[in-house]
Length: 388
Ligand code: ADP
Ligand code: MG
Image (cartoon, rainbow, N blue to C red; front, side, top):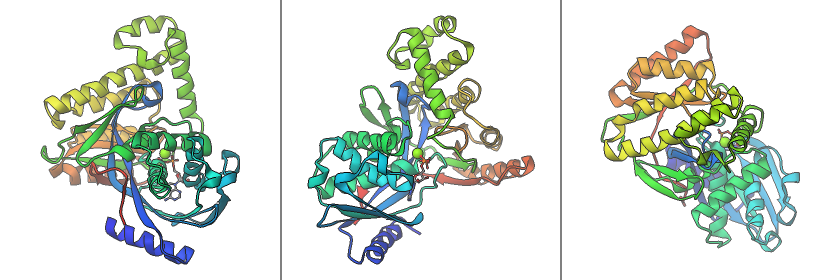
């Protein structure tokens, strides 16, 4: 299906489910993080881009205070009174869209005085692949409600609303990167975000002119941000910052690492070293893109993967194999992307070698006895927008 087909299908499904026409259809993209992993909650730097996989939200206001959500993703129809919406009553997938309404309330919007709404969601962002289907659903609903409720919030504010929904309504302790990429992304460009000041700059990627593509290798190994490893990594980063007497690891430079090694245990030190060197790699990537173009960033992507594998220990054997096999097949740089413990790897690949990378990675997985990965390319695309 083309994206125009998704838009008209979303409108048709809304009509079907709710028995009236939607006010409009809004969409927001998933994202790939080119580089800068687990740096966002350390107030560091990230460089994601919005991708050409999106989530659509067909929305219609109601004349009462009820909110109803449906999705192609699930049979449920979930209904709440807006005046009553709170993290305690939200769970499952509907916590993402309804959490946005709650988070807008936390942002000073009087929910009891707002018109209710019906939302129907559809998506071509793979779920749980590390491409942030969660931010896509949040941001599509956020821009729809912002427009229909005439809130006129700016996009950095809507990104914070999305993050609040994910942190408190869903309960996943994630940073601001995903929502920022989904809301601020631009075609052929990445979003260079300083997660401390929340200032962002658009950086030209120039993939097409350089004859490069981003290949995604979805390992199908499932990850869950709401549990285990992610929270443990955040705790290690906080412990490392506390041991160094700084507010966050953003305040630690590569030159401080020798001192860091002396004031914390080895595991905490390696977690800190990943974050500190990853911040430096994001800055190096932005500089290389601006000064030399995308052919110059391959080695930096490779180094990022090694750091996540050995220091931050968030890779899995499937991701490591994806990276090695893609490089052997001709990718100029490759790394796991997203929160880790599964999900996807990216491989920056010359266009004429995409088929080769695809078949060699698939063959390597088959030989290792792993579940077949899903392999596809993504293009840096525009952020959230109204479609209809
Ligand atoms: P990721 O963001 O990497 O895809 P997450 O675990 O953060 O993975 O978010 C995935 C969750 O988001 C799903 O389990 C589901 O609850 C929700 N979600 C994503 N897309 C949709 C959709 N189209 N309809 C309903 N819920 C969705
Ligand atoms: Mg997510």
